[in-house]
Image (tube, rainbow, N blue to C red; front, side):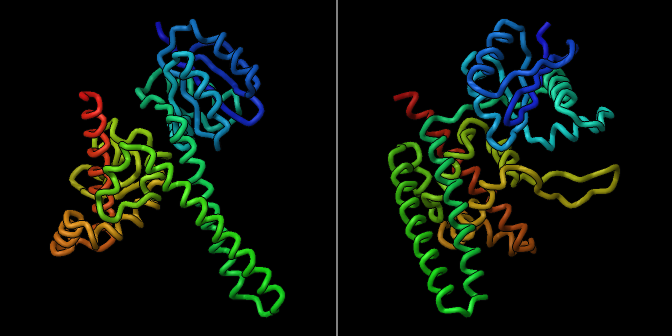
Length: 306
C-alpha cells in the first residue's frame, strides 16, 4: 500500500517521516543530503510527499524529489498547523511536524507541485527584487519628509535617485523577459494588464492556464468563501491565497475597470445593483484573472494543435 511521506524543512536539515512508520529520519538540506533522500525513497511506493513552504529553503528538495519522479506537494504552513490542531497535536517539534505532514500525505488529496520553467524562476526573482525596491523607495521618501538638515537631505535624495535608476533598469529587464515569451503576449491585449502583472503571474502563478477559473481564483485568494450554518447565511469573504499576486492584480484591476470595456461594464453593473465598491473591485479582480487564465489555456491548446 502506498504510504504518505512528510518532510519538515529548515535551513540546515530535513526531517522525514513515513506515515505509520518508525521515528523520522534526518537528512542534511544540501546536495549530498538530497541525494541520500532521493536514494532512500525513490523505490518506496508513495502516495505523495508533503512539505511546507519555508521561505525558499524547501525549493531544492522540491526540485530533487520532482526530478526523481516522486509525487511532491508544497503546502502553506497554516494548512499544516490547522490540520495538526484538528488532530489534537498541539505540541510542535521538527519530528512532530514531519509526522503531521506524513499524516496529511496519507489522508488528503492535495494539488501536486508544478515546477516553473527557468524563465519563470528568473521572473519570480525579478519580481521579488522589484517589490524590495518599491518598498525601499517608499521608506526613503517618508524619511526625507522628516529631515531638515541639508546634508542629510542631499544624501537621501542621492539614495532615492539610485533606487529609481535601479527600478527603471529592472522594469526594462522584466519587460524584455515578458516580450520573449509568445504565450504572454495575449495577456497584454487586455487593457490595464502590463508587464508587471504579466511577470507576476508568470513567476508566481505557474498554474495559470492549467486549472479552471474557479480553482485559479481560489488559489490566488479572490474567490468568495461561504460562511453558512443551518438556516443562517453569513457574508462571503475572500481569504488566503497568494498575496504577491493579489496585490499586483488589484492595481491592474483599478486600471482595467476604467479602460477595458468588459471589466468596466461588469464593475458598473455591480455598483448599479448596490454592491459596495470593495466587493465590486474584488469581483472584477476575479473576472480579470479568469479571463487571463482562459487566454493562456487557449494559447496552449492552439500551440499543441499546431
